[in-house]
Length: 403
Ligand code: DI6
Ligand code: FE
Image 1 (tube, rainbow, N blue to C red):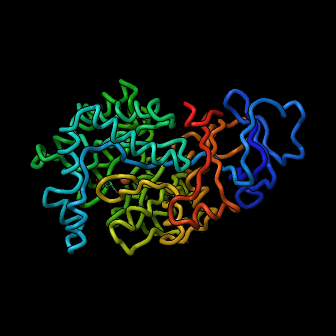
Image 2 (image 1 turned 120 degrees about the vertical axis):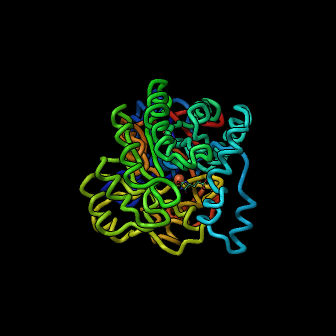
Image 3 (image 1 turned 90 degrees about the vertical axis):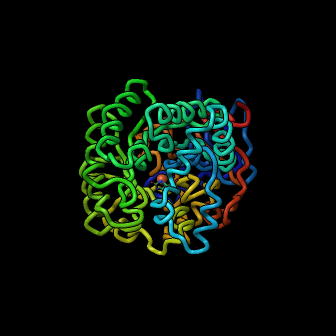
């Protein structure tokens, strides 16, 4: 396949803004990129086979949504109404709603229902340029339902054509049946869920929610030790609602990422920089929870911590079905530049998933995951408030819609 007659935003680090190649072309063989450059320089032997005409638009790496919770039962529109009348997210959680209400709906949903609803959500992301998505469990909170969620998430890959990575989030909330026995539940997570998910090859990583309404830093330490014992990479929901020292905790465990970070201190940022832990910024959650506190973006930038951007698609704090709107919110709420935001949903997101050698930029040797946009400049991806016109989505050199 040859993509021609457009401009290419390779998103490769260093060099031109957006790694831009005006009047560029991308040549693909066997699902991988074999050549990128100005179309005028295209080697003759690559000028054959099927052509995808970019019609003057821009070609970017396929978007990578590296933080979602898109498999779940039910919805939380009722809680949204209560919050608009003044109840807080934490109050609702403490009163037995919040995550636990989605746990009830997920436990009672059948596999088929979870799959069909998950498929509808993932297809919406794919139509907006997403070629890779991470999907977390965390609405089962018992061994069977957590594994069921991971199996459904895995099945969504072949069902949609999107490349899917799964993350076990057993430590998302305390399930009601363990309300008086935190230690007992952590035993289930560390001694049953993590080993079972690892043995079945169902999880690519382990995540935990470190928060007053969820798990303490010491409890998250325990979860991460169990994950490391099974050689699973870790990530953390860190400092979203309060500063728990989550960023430093994640760094201490060599986590791939610390996510949210609205309340992270500069000390936490320094620890992340030293450990090579990536920041995942989730502006959909900050917006939907109407939290005016923003992550320490200037400190992340000045300490050289790479920033990824993701939807956090979930029913409680970020029912955000448009990755392009996440780019816009990252700029408007967190003051990322459009280039940083797009890099955060391509190059940096690939690193969060440990796939930086395979995807995330349009460079020779990488998989041919691309999106073609009807825009005159790549900044338009963050400029339109959702709905930037995505014309084609290609994974491994094949159009997604053609699968
Ligand atoms: N932080 C989030 O933003 C989601 N999980 C988490 O730990 C929210 C999950 C929910 O409210 O259902
Ligand atoms: Fe999340």
